[in-house]
Image (cartoon, one colour):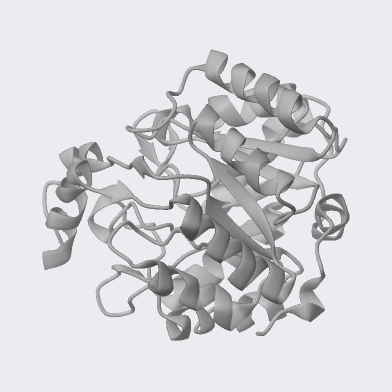
Length: 311
């Protein structure tokens, strides 16, 4: 692992898993996503991992126009690195999932390093009243869906977004096998170091939220990539802050946000993304880790710069 010294905080404000009925604080309009992202950056997030939503009902959207409803405002209001999801949701085609990235040509895009069962249906058990007709079927149907990225899809994303626009990737690895897939594409020369590896734990269908799995992932990444990667980690739901802390103790970086957990403490909904950023920043600083600025994160990751995007 490349020890960066300062810790990069990524914030994922909305995602495509949680629905409006799960928390009144989840940002789903363009104005809310922009405001939450900007506040997270002001609290210390150097990278903003962004999904779009349909303005009318808060459902996940792949449409470029929905991204463009908030991207320029965020860029004008803060220096944070903007990271566009190519994962979208399991209900979208690959062409749909690439629409926002191709329109924005951002510094960073997320890239799921393989297919997996992505079962978040248990999140619906807390909901007593569904606000919109799409929500219940979408959540409960997760147990029967696969988040699909085969090697042909991954290659397309690397070529059509990475090589085409100079965009680098947040390689989302939900299991150890995903590290080997990344190594395969690195050996073929389709992506270049330093690799930002985002270990994702606690999704039903992926690697479990056991800190021994986190240590194992770092061990295997060290074996495959040596000093050519920057590590970050998070866990979904209640393990979010525990895994961020463990990643920091290993010399890695962290990701928080309402995409990954709606809570700030046991049974307590987070009132904002900035609240989560502030909490993990406090923990990191208590551990003696300095927080990376957006400019420092760009240098660590070899990014093209905010002046080279299309928004």
